[in-house]
Amino acid sequence: MRYDDRVQIIRVVKSSGYLGDEIEKELPPETVVCAISGLTNSDKQTYFKDQYKVDGFRVHLQGPPDQYDGLKYVIRDGVKHEFAGRRILRNSLVVIVG
Image 1 (cartoon, rainbow, N blue to C red):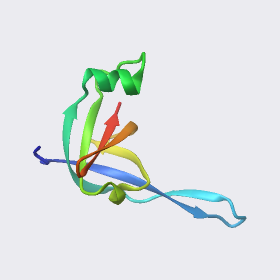
Image 2: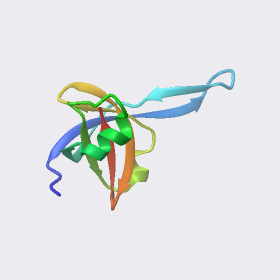
Image 3: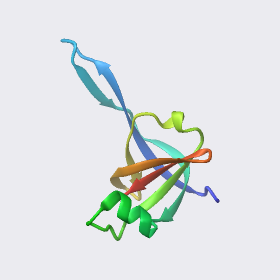
């Protein structure tokens, strides 16, 4: 698989607030190397049930999955996408975006 695309990811870190409550803080976007592919029919049925997404795609993030803890958003071509699911495939993290 060729990892020749680039996306920006936004991760969230939880920290304790002034009164002991948890606060989510977004870290600045970082650009990562990835491979982008289309969704298969089984992906559409598994993650989107009755609402098939025509513009959905899969992002293969290279590296150990622990590196991407707290992943919240993926930014591709200036558009911010939330992910619908995630899988570990060999030595990469696959994020299903819809």
